[in-house]
Image 1 (tube, rainbow, N blue to C red):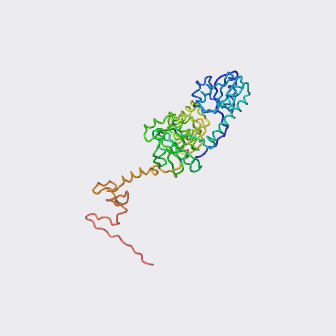
Image 2: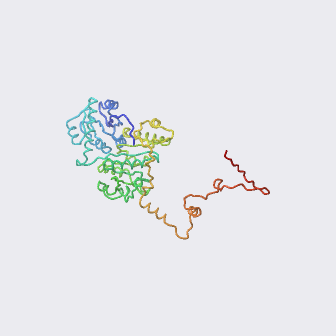
Image 3: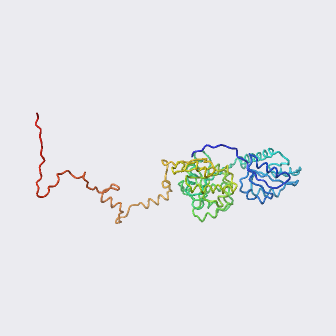
Length: 430
């Protein structure tokens, strides 16, 4: 995979504003134009912004209040939708509010009027503290894995091949504890690509009784020779309906605590499980190829992600088969999508290994049974009959007589004429 050079920029902090108080609207306008912040949206009531709070990939929430005490009910409603740190903005505070905010673990309390830079610093400080707590994990020794989702809105672009190779590389060469999650729930092929015969799938995990935890997740994964753990898709398409968004959300949370990297292979649809995965995705790899149908679908996918308020900074365009000579170039792909290609994967025909060579033992045993010797008296195949008649060389044919293969001889004598003997001339030495 080739990394295309690009300009590194500081990632902006995504903020959502709720509530109202004196001077808050003016502050909100100033924050919207600040280069270090990205104002996702605003609403007076928390219920009105429930969709953005739940799926907006927020880094912080600013909630304004006019009261002299902490708005406990509104704070609880915000925390039901997001785990982002909450900062309280008030036009008039009191010691009681500060004490209540300390007990409620509010990130900060800002009393207006405030300088915009002071507010930006408080927001950045709250997100930095959240990142350190996430890195420390529960109990001080846990993990907070990174979720990397491979997606393309068109089939046949190489999602599964990319996801399996990427996950194997993380486990084998980077030494990271990696989980490959196959979320192509109806027709997933990640296990086949890796030559595995899993005994348990994600379906068995979600229907099993009891609370999902780290030990239970480990009991339903299959180990690959590279050190990778695989949680395959269900074996039957109808079992996909039981993998609900709530169960998948809990699965991803537990996987974060157990693994360093979680690579997710997806189907080409924006269905419920895909949306639940996007809500927790740290990096989204969008696979493209050098053909018009893929570019059309990928452009629609980018527009859908924008409507879902997915951060554009987390999207990476991957150009698969980048060296294919089909009359289309990389700059044309970038112009159609409005984004730079981040990674390129060229076609390497010398390294290509067909999937049939990595099939499971059950498949090979079935093939060996079908190649058993034919019983006596059975009709021979046209190929064996051809070998019997014309020799054992595969594809050999009877040699036809040609002008070169005939022996040299004098031409035949017509009837009634005698054949003349050619005159021989001899030279006498002088």
